[in-house]
Image 1 (cartoon, rainbow, N blue to C red):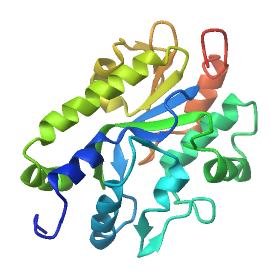
Image 2 (cartoon, helix red, strand yellow; image 1 turned 30 degrees about the vertical axis):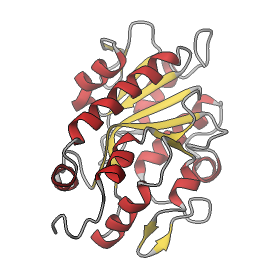
Image 3 (spheres, rainbow, N blue to C red; image 1 turned 120 degrees about the vertical axis):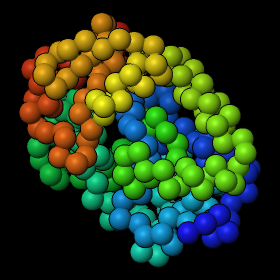
Image 4 (cartoon, rainbow, N blue to C red; image 1 turned 180 degrees about the horizontal axis):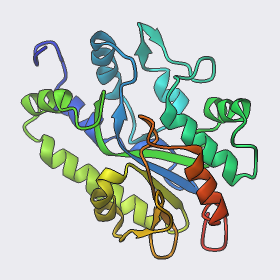
Length: 242
């Protein structure tokens, strides 16, 4: 594959790179991951979806955004057939736990994903350290193509990072949950915090408003981590929290 097959203008790449996330930035709970995933999309779907992402606003409703995307040539409707991603499932488990519900109940978790996760009127905002989609952590295929097509890519990424920092620090009451301990330093830089150990698998900022958990996919996250969050009272919406 080369840049001739990826028919994106620098302006379109700038819009893709400028995307902040799904839901509303004023939501009481943020989730910050590593990079936008591609799931099981093949290369044809990915190219179509990158073109569609160039039409995204700075923030989008998760369902509305995915209705513009395709997988195996068909639109993605998360209310009808949500993608089977562990990342979304652990987000939903945590949110069900915060509400005091049965976070181990599969139906409750799936219902949260279908109707509440990343919605503009909901309780969550989903964002990433990197705005460039990839199939696996630190894959550089699409970034290298973007670099060939957009000479201002690095500047656009830096502007997006600055914007994310600004929005995160404006939302002083949001509980911000980062996932991906190998990038602990990057999360610290974005949020202006220093991590402290709460348990062997949970790190937190001094005041407890920022949490760092294992990555939500690839078998790194587990129910024991959520149990630890609950036992430590870190998912209780206390004063000073959302």
